[in-house]
Length: 192
Image (cartoon, rainbow, N blue to C red):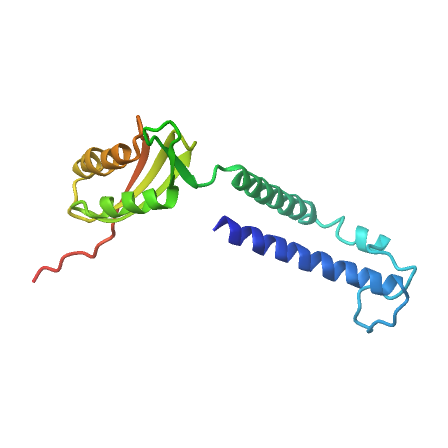
């Protein structure tokens, strides 16, 4: 998802900069431009004095400018934090007993964990992502529970079965997990 957002943002920024630069370059080199073109000559400026002072006396102008800039800053900070967020774990170091170790694909362990979690009674869907280091992975598990499921029982079975199997099969000393439970929406029962 983050890759798609990055590509869309970079594409839009590039398109805006290309169009603005092309418009200024065309007018600055003295090319004949259409009458609707925003810049019409070599001596034209991007913002004239009249354009800069047009909205200055309006009461709504400065709050709108400040709000728009605040939104842009918040979006930029969100994007920066999304870049710094730790990505999924690509591989896990498994102790093979020969001192070398073996590498297990993170997606494979995520798929197995999600499959085993979905097979538990009362779990409609499970999503698993591994984070952390290769030698000490951590699991983030999201469970969508059926309406009849008991959250405590589902959590206990997930810990005792799925996470324990994954920890033992990968030869890990521990596999800390953050589990988020959500209930599936269901329609009301009809009474006749």
